[in-house]
Length: 315
Image (tube, rainbow, N blue to C red; front, side):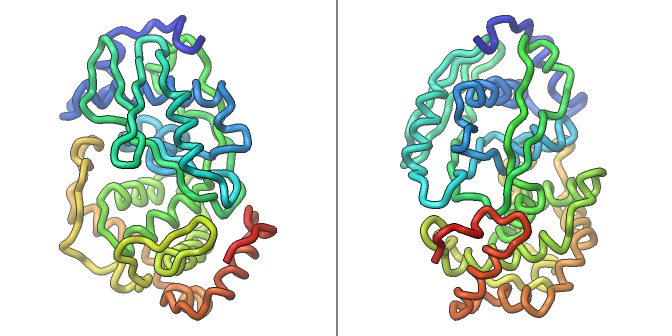
């Protein structure tokens, strides 16, 4: 069983904390425990045509490794539109009720969302792992290996390859979210990717196209799975690339080392993503989020390169 042959000690876990950082042992425990849990979920078949890894934790585990910010939640996308996401979340939570090596996982449903408490002999983090099952990705996923860091040598098992939402789609969702709310963690992830080779070689045109379409869907929804976002906004690149005073730095100081200075982070974001202002005529139309463009939006999503939805019934 995963974890039976581990050789982790408190010392190894403590060394997982970046030297000189203010991050606590709890964060290191959560980060390592996530590896054990993800390997277990892969072993029991959760990723077999059911779910695809996504979000900030996917960026850390499969792209950034120890260079990236810590992320406490586990976000997944269903593989097919119309899947019963609540049932899948319950299934994942059931599989996550397990002890793996030094870590015990206790999922609980809180206000309609599963949260997983982690216990270990090293520390018992107060922060829980929040579980989120989102709609299908629009593009065919990639399959990637975990980025190596030293603690993994003590696990006693080999971490698996995992299916993950394509980097361009991850970035486009963060850009779309920043169009409606100023979340520092999303800005931090965008800046890290744009600065870091080889990930910085992503297709800017694909990200821009996807971001315009995702902003439209955030405003109006798309059946059967995509609901309008709370307080949606059109994508105005000039406004998006203008200094703002509403940054929400929730957890960014807790999860990044060193924590970014918001003014500098914003300046980097504007410089590295200035190409968002170069919308094509069609992208600008979608970015305005006119409800009458639904048919064109559906056609564009189905026509995306490597689209997973080209044959799906969406409305």
